[in-house]
Amino acid sequence: MKHLMTLRYIDAVARIGSIRKAAEVLALTSTALNRRILSVEEELGVPIFERLPRGVRLNSAGEILVHHIRNQLSDMERVQSQIADLSGVRRGHVSIACSQALLPFFLPEQIATYRKEHPAVTFGVYLRDRAAAEQALVDHTADLALVFEPVRLAEFQTLLTVRQQVYGVMSEDHPLATKDTLRLRDCLQHPIALPTTSYGVRNLMETALVDSTITLDPVIESDSFEFLRNHALAEGVISFQIPIGLPTKDIPEGSVIRPIDSRDLPTGLIYFGQLRGRTLPVAVARFADQIIKILQARYP
Image (tube, rainbow, N blue to C red; front, side, top):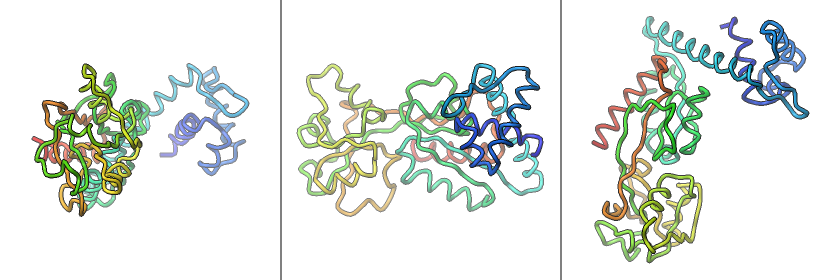
């Protein structure tokens, strides 16, 4: 919508933090973009950006304005989606902030299923840690969030929670591979590979051992779950993952996946939600319904 163009420009400058760099992204001259901003500031009667030596930063008035702008743009997306729905053409864009475990298998499968019926809908999928996912909802860079063991949920409207047991991933010739269920103390007698402390699986394990004399002493630590999963085969260590981050079929040859006894390590929770109080665009709401149904069926 042309009447929203200036608002989009201001939002872009706020996100990028530089008029010059935002102008390059928007295919404008920095002079033209600056004129737009000055015009809005003149109309408001106050500046909205602090001019810094290496860019710009929102001031208090600017933060209020940008919050309004993002709500306006979000509402317009919802209206456009509803109008497109009237003609029977499902259009729109769905943006998702998620924990790393959702990236390899679950979300590719679900997005492909949705786009088979609605190929005009586009998607953005963004890796966000437990703290950043909620902020992505607040600043409207994400419509939905799927996070494991989030840090806080003040602005998060929970649509569904599902329990996830932690599994050990190892090579088929590992000494513990013959066991149906793993005890945590047995796992820790062997070399282990762990995600970094910002991830929910690591947090669950540390919490479980808080009153124990046993400590986590990984030989490998990484913020890449794919690396950890593959390294379990390369060296014979045990890595750890939740079911939604593991393949539902076609387990990689040579690997074994075993649950950790819930007496040692309690189940964690995946939270699926949106920004509190926001009315979702049609395409986003339909995709959210699909996710809820599949999670309920797969993890009752």
